[in-house]
Length: 116
Image 1: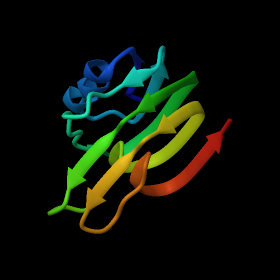
Image 2: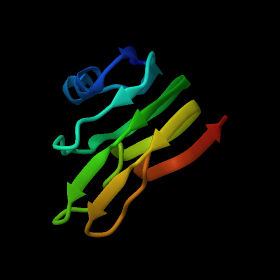
Image 3: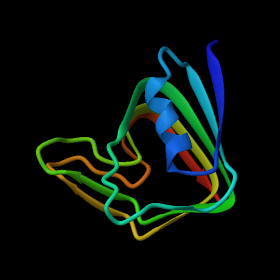
Image 4: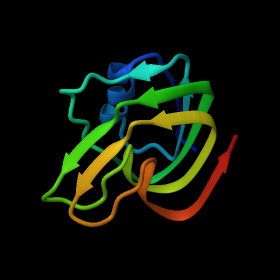
């Protein structure tokens, strides 16, 4: 199994996921609160065949703005296979998209579990 772990302290760390290819499982640790600037328009990350595990460690992502008006699948992630989230706060999330939206993921193919 191709498993990657990512330590995230800011939005630039989160953006590093875009360069990861052929990952079966991605574990993300949010090490501190992430405040996204108002002018930053986030583009959802596509990991269609990946299990994503997010440990928020009681930290949060704030001011996430997604403006995908001409596209579908808008969220922190677009398409993923499975999602497990623990102790993550989300606040002031605004998503503008054609159709399929979700704060964490627009589409989860199999299972989603959120705890805390």
